[in-house]
Length: 360
Ligand code: F6P
Image (cartoon, rainbow, N blue to C red; front, side, top):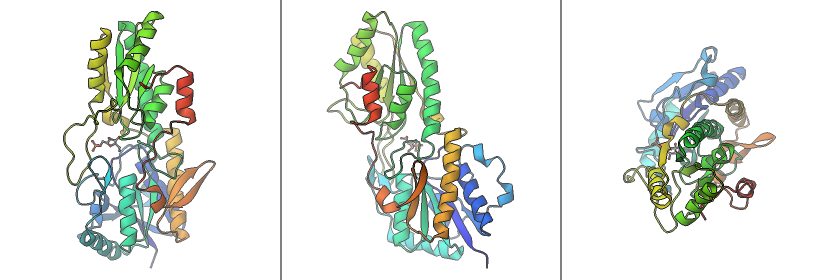
C-alpha cells in the first residue's frame, strides 16, 4: 500500500495557500506518496469525509493562484477562538469523530495549514491521536516561533501600494487620508506597510493612542506647509482607555469581527483639526490575489518542509522560518500566545527616528 498523507487549510484564507498545497503534493509525490486534499478545513474529516486525491501532474498554476482550492472555515464547531481571541477547547466527541475520519482515509499524517486558531486545533487533534504537522499561515503575522508567516508579505505589499495611492489623492486635495488595515490584535501589517508607504501616523494595538498626539503630528505638518497627512490605522488599534471597535458581537464559537476604528479616528481628526478627512478600509483585498515572490518561495519551502517532517515522523511539529533556514518547532510552542510588534524592536525604533507618530 502506498503511503498517503492528507492536507487541509483552516481559518481565514490568504495568498500562498495553493502554493503550499502544490509544494506538499509535489514533494510527497517525489517520495512516492499520494496526497489527499481534505475539503472545508477540519470539517472535511468528519464522516462522510470530504476528500479527493490531488494529482501531482495537475498542480500547474497553483503557485500564484489566490485563495485555497480546498476551501476553509474560521467558525463553527472547529473554531478554536471566541470573543477577543480567547482559546476554545473543541468538543472531545468531535475530535474523536475527526480521528475516525482520519483513520478511515488511511492517512499516515495530516498537514494542517493554518493560523493560531487552526494550529491549536491541530494540537488538540494530535492529543486525540491524529498525526499532524503544521504550516503557519496568516496575513496577521502573529504566530510565535516563526520570524514570519506566509501571506504577510503579500498583505503588506498590497497595503503599501494602496497607501501610495492614498498619499497622492491626499496631496492633491490637502486632506488627511486614513488607511485601515487588518491584523487583528497585532500591528504588523500597519507598522510594515505604514513605514514602507511613508505614513505620518501609525496606530497599532500594541500602543493605545490619544487624539492630542495624533493631531499634533497633523498640525506640525501644516506648520511646515504640508497640508496633507497619511494615517494608517490597524483594525485592532484603540484609544487609550477605550475598547476595540468591532463590526457586531462575537459569538460563542467565533471571534469578534474587528473593524470601523478608521472611521472613528477620521471623525475625531476632522473635528479637532478642521481638516477634510477620508477613510479607506482595505479589508479583504489584503487577503486575496496572488502571493508575492517572497511568499511563493516561503510557501514552497514550508510545503516541502512539512513533508520532510512527516518523513522524519516529527508529528506535532510545524515548520518555522528562522532565516536562513526553515526549522521544526513543536506546535505547542507556537500556539496560544500572540506574537505582537515588539515596542523596543527595530521596526518601532526606525519609525520613531523618522518622526512617524504612534499617537502616544
Ligand atoms: O486573521 C486574518 C484576518 O483577515 C484578520 O486580519 C481579520 O481581522 C479577520 O481575518 C477577518 O475575518 P473574516 O474574514 O471572518 O471577516
